[in-house]
Length: 388
Image (cartoon, rainbow, N blue to C red; front, side, top):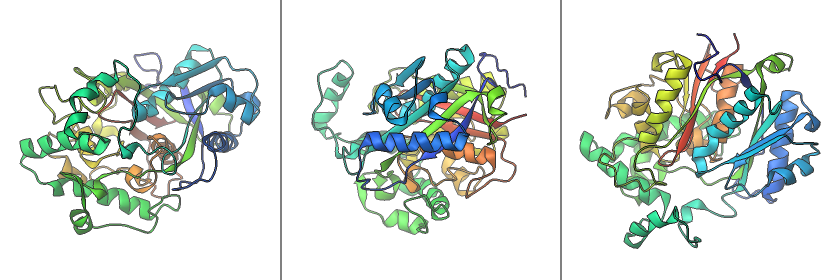
């Protein structure tokens, strides 16, 4: 495979550093401090100094502004700074933006970061409490009066339709949860370290929003994660093996809303992820058979199944059996179900570890990793590959 892909981006940049705080339920410190700790750890991992950084990318939802973080970390001049919208859908897009900046020559070292006290502070799972009037928020007016107050309730609508169309029961979601927790059990950084579950445990867990049970839903976590991106040429002079960005993509589907796209003709798929999948396969020259590890955004188990189907790993309705048969190493860090909920940024870090050969659940010979970002919202994805 030629790493210089058809969109001009592939093979031009690489992730060279990863850094994180501990993942907890009560960090006891500010979100800015979490961000600074993660960024410093990422730069140390990359063998770079704060003064080397000239670009920063984060989420629109992050509370730590780029210039404030630059001050806190002792950085100098910034020539590039950017933010990406739509919550967890931004995860892989932050790396895409960093890679575009590096490939275009507007920055040399770009750090992507996300930090929040999502468990001890604002909890996304607690539902809508107050929202300023916006055109974007108007879509919620057709669902909030009927009780769809939380992400779980909104995803449950699509999950119910998926089960109905394919003749499945809620137990179909169990293999995703069991796989995540099996990997988390071997990961000392995971909140559920040494705590695997069984399919019976999944089936016995309480309802959250039928057909979603407690073990179908991701955690709420305090923590920070940073990713350092630079050119492949510079990466080769740094201490860690680079995870080369073979392809990066964003996607928004027809009739797209934020987790309330119920006016679509078909609720059994994720069209926004289909847009991402087509771009990644086209621009990289890779396909499902080439992927060694899948790091798929798992805020809710049904959407992991739909992602596998959108990317062509298996036909519609067959993803549960695909996961149960372990046909693709999946979320080897434990995912957001088992390790931590960091809006998908910890998943990118795990993909980098797989390329380096340093994962606690290492897949032998892993050279091609697929990473996805939030689903049910405009989203993004990455293909990271070994250098050479």
